[in-house]
Image 1 (tube, rainbow, N blue to C red):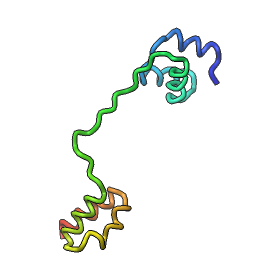
Image 2: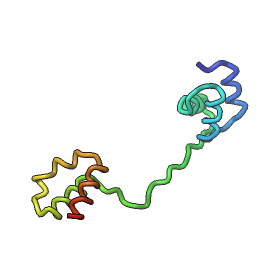
Image 3: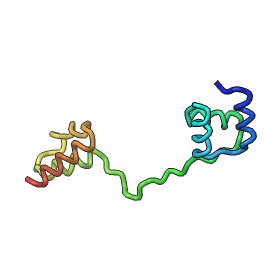
Image 4: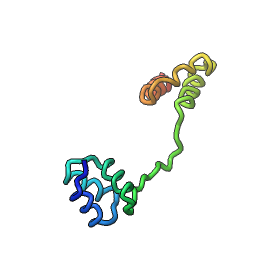
Length: 100
């Protein structure tokens, strides 16, 4: 998969970021993940991309179901199976329940 010439080019570049690994991947018809893995295997410096987490707290599906149960005035246990539904469906249901 990686020719000696490609490995030499990796070493010439010297250090990588996610963007430079992606550029190398596109140039050589590889996946960015493969290049990042190869860079790490070759023990070349790699700086991963920064992932910014949302400042808002995560809302759990069970919490949405609890609100729905409160609005409908039913015990949570009777509808807790709804927490297996996807979040978009739960939010739609909550909006409909609140509108009623």
